Length: 421
Image (cartoon, rainbow, N blue to C red; front, side, top):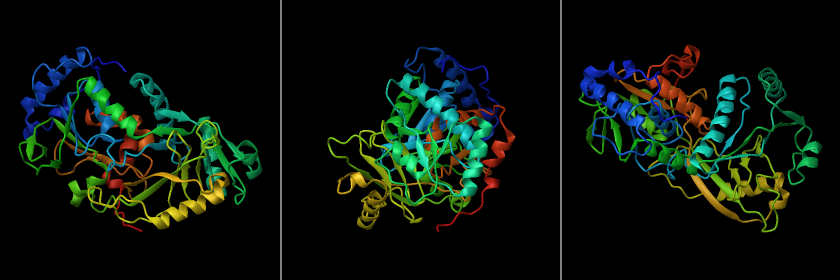
């Protein structure tokens, strides 16, 4: 993307909230943003004008939104309590999966396909490998398979429906004998997670964005600024809170019953030193009725333990893996990857996801705080679409024309209370 300000950048959305957020400061900041983005990437700030937009959270929602906003010409401050890619973040860990299969939810297939293009472009721009295309194998019920095939046929997305014997013939290291059919999606892949968010934040700063490590809170309505950072007000034209598992804490009355943050445990199984069959070049990712896996991208084969929605405290929760879930993973390895039986667990990660009631994202204006936006409820699939989400959020915050049906799907009004199961 060009570093030149886009003519589509509008100040209407930023300055309409000026009465409560400092209209004169926001106007000055927007003019300054245009001038600074025109300068060479990495040029020092000309002055200390206030940001057009403050983004809270440097993960899949906030990190990509901050970068897209900056590239659109806005002056942006990105705030994160622990830093991009940190181990407490839902966008941390080593890897995430990219797939296009979302049943009848066409928007996510389209967004994931757009994201795949952007991942490939971004890794070239960033100068680091982030996307590893290796396909995916998924099991589905007969009805789900019919829905998925119909959508992929309509969108011309390639796929195959394989028998267990056909899977075994292509990938002898995998055993799917308990299923009748397996859905193969050749366009799937693995994305480096932590490295991607670090790279996105570095690109954001290289293009003139400001990064701050600090504890952000929403300020009460009618205050001089929409948020505080480490107790000090941060005036800006608009504020986007995209802080993942912390969103229900920042806005307990608004989101406390709409987003839950259950614990997830991840195990990485090492291969024998001379056995490369489980590397991404030789094995697709797998999602079945038991769990999901990611092929080895220099860190071991990733296997997610199957845990019910046990609440997770993102700040103080215990991040040591559980012994009984390790046993579960070892049982899964014996079933699906017989060649890895007896191999060591080389790493573990404990994280959390943010689940909404219906699995759709929550992206909307705060109903009571002018100029404040909330974005979250990633529901386990936001990361792969991060670059696409960033484009969408930037357009929303800048009040650019969009698709009303998509906006309604992600609105607060479309979500009900979500409780732990």
